[in-house]
Length: 606
Ligand code: PEP
Ligand code: MG
Picture (spheres, rainbow, N blue to C red):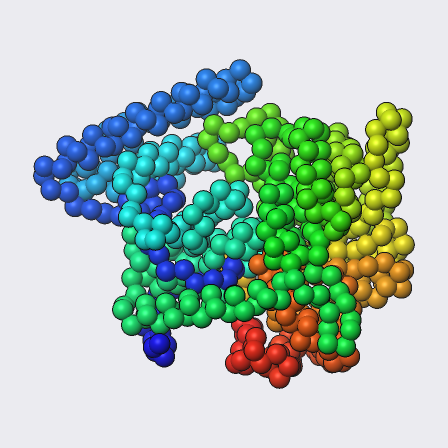
């Protein structure tokens, strides 16, 4: 095995490692036309070929637009008009003729020529002193993106290495990731450690690096890539020696994975007998088998919104009921915590051509009018804003409750009154089921997510009203520190070890325990080994995480002593800065868990 470490000149890119694992594979750029927007000089003979590629791509785009138009014209007259406009734009002189002219004049490929023509159109629009007209450039770009898509679709897919590919794009939606079939790995410009794409990648065990600058400019399809999902390092076309170094690291990683897997089915208990629950976060019900294979003691968070976000239409009560029933039956006798739909904010539909419905467009319209989506109509606010949809989900949940151990969780509760409103809706649905003679479990635990600072401040009052708390640290950190969790520009300021966060968690745990209820954590912090001693010491009762992390966290728990981590938590709570907290914690980790933390640097610096 080589001991060579990468030298600085070979570190091609540094991003944020959001889902662990090392992948060595070829890149495939999947952003529309991304790869082929690069300039290619064409030989004289291939100019006609480039022009016909462009003409064919435009024709295919037009066909597809017409199909979409026919499909939706009846339900959405406005949409049909927009498509008509787009079809006209396809043949607009400034796009169509100009691209053909540029191909001929500059002897370049169709993508580069189209990009150039687009630039000229953009410059022309920018000169117009009318915001409505200049805003129409967006339509032109959308049309051009469709042509880029068709152009890249005409290219051969690159040769696969071991059947694996690393997908590269500016952004991937959670829905895109759910549909990634080869599961080798992916890279993107957008997103941070707790963005929803990162969460889905971790759950599915797909290594990923986000927050990379200018991926389209720096990576081309077919480049050989090393992706390190732990450190966030990405190497493009590495030299042989570096490749060997990473092949070794890949083997070590797989070996560690096998060793840690032995902890999957052991009890989550400290060496001095404190037992906690380690559970799984799921986005899709089909993953339940995988969660138990990793040793989950239940489902601590089922993000029910994915069923809505990937549907073409509002899911029916029967579909929801069947999904929840299957999930509860598969998990029984273990508890399943299903969160009511947390949509809005950054959890929105992936805009897909040809995939829209009244349900989708209504929501999209609502959201597009929001200046601050994270502070807008999301989570429980959206549930209460759409009472029929909310009641439908609650009916389906309660009907399914007879098939297992259901706990219902409400996201983003911010006040006592809001909670009362929710409980009234639940009581109303239960009453209706009773009067309809439909069976359901009379005793279903209700819990709320602590995700906004106001809920922390009144946690004592809220604790008297529910059966359990679940702390959503992803949002709690976002809302407390005013850091957009999906914005790579401020990702370095997203600080789980901020003294404010530690104090809030401690305050919530105390309030819950005083009221005699359980408190868990289901944000990403729960699945990170480096935070485990702190959270355990603060008195958290259950930890819910992406399934592959479960054996690692169980191993940490079994190597911990309750008395020792409690002392650690008290010391950390007394610190005045995140730097101080990090240093103390780092020292503790290296001393008490040398297998997991052999070297002394597991945190990014401030
Ligand atoms: C959280 O905010 O910590 C959480 C678990 O919810 P989500 O990540 O789905 O917003
Ligand atoms: Mg949340």
